[in-house]
Amino acid sequence: NVNDLKSVQRYLKANYVKPNPEYTGVAKGKNVLVIHLESFQQFLIGFKWKGKEVTPNLNKIYHAKDTISFDNFFNQVGQGKTSDAEMMLENSLYGLQSGSAMSSYGTSNTFESAPAILHQEAGYTTAVMHGGEGSFWNRNNAYKSFGYQYFMPLSYYNNKSGYYLGYGLKDKIFFQQSIKYIERLPQPFYLKMITVTNHYPYNLDKQNQTISKTNTGDETVDGYIQTAHYLDQAIGQLMKWMKKTGLDKNTLIMFYGDHYGISGNHHKASAQLLGKDSFNDFDNLNFQRVPLMFHMKGLKGKIDHTYGGEIDVLPTLLNLLGVNDKGTIQFGHDLLSKDAPQIVAQRNGDFITPEYAKVTGNYYYTKTGVEIKHPSKKLKAKLTAISNKVTTQLSLSDRVINGNLLRFYKPSWFTKVKTKDYNYNKTES
Ligand code: GP9
Ligand code: MN
Image (tube, rainbow, N blue to C red; front, side, top):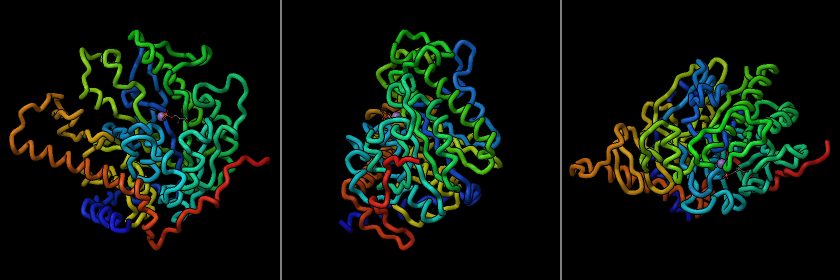
């Protein structure tokens, strides 16, 4: 009820983190292109196999002088995987403890999401392109609740034999065919493009295999760099096109990895890939790092070591765009803020900070990976306090979604999204 919303608001007010004013509006009015890098882990950046870079294009972007890249950015998804990542990025609300929030609540709940905010506050045209089925993760309904004006799923694409692999069109084909739609989007646009080829089980057709598989002997792992390499090439082609058209001059491109590609069931192969002797649960938490990069002509870039996660992307982005979200119910904060608390929750209540980590109930020193077996009273109190903060935040976010609390939240600047305003069926053109 309304009182639940009030306690959430009280919590958020008490824990408010002021965005970094140095970055406010540096990308004002720019197009925003969000590139979803499927199952893409941070360790791939700079990773070489047999002397060959696996992701040369992304590596270049990562190190470019006009890219803000994060190297301690974590995925925070639960069972909802991709959809949890999307939920966090569009709303700064966590996915749920079980299932997918987008599937369970995406149709009926009220949201104040990125596309609606950007459209209403800054006149953005909003769209998602995805070479997979529109109903997957309930996207065709959830995107309406988020206020997306356009959604181009598989039905918008030519799906010739050989084009489709796993969950959708192969990334290169997807990008190529998306061009005609991108060209028609009124600017400024907020566009999300969801890739799929780098998805388990990492199979790729012969003709696209241009790097050899790794040799851990773990079949579900060894194809991973091959599909990641393909995804990277697809990104390279898209970047080239952006440059050719000049779109790169007025577009902020944001890259993010949604979640791990190699699950916690492959410790031995993971150790081998990383050149380590062993791989434990703490290593696996570290393995949850994924890319987050903001790339734009003229942006003052850096590799930022702040610890953060997917929940923090929306406040970071809105600050870069100089779009005021005036007290929206968001659980994340600007990652570029000097006051970033650097406590990164995992959906199961685990966490990592620059100093400490909690993994499946055990505590570790983040820097050394040494388990904290007998903490002093003082340290114990500190760890418990962080842990409580994490669980409080997760449960308050759950309350917002489970209780559909945003229906009670009516900021003067925001007009409630009406799902019937949107129709994603393809009409002939
Ligand atoms: C399918 C894709 C995959 O459309 O987004 O979702 P995932 O299995 O990664 O959650
Ligand atoms: Mn995914």
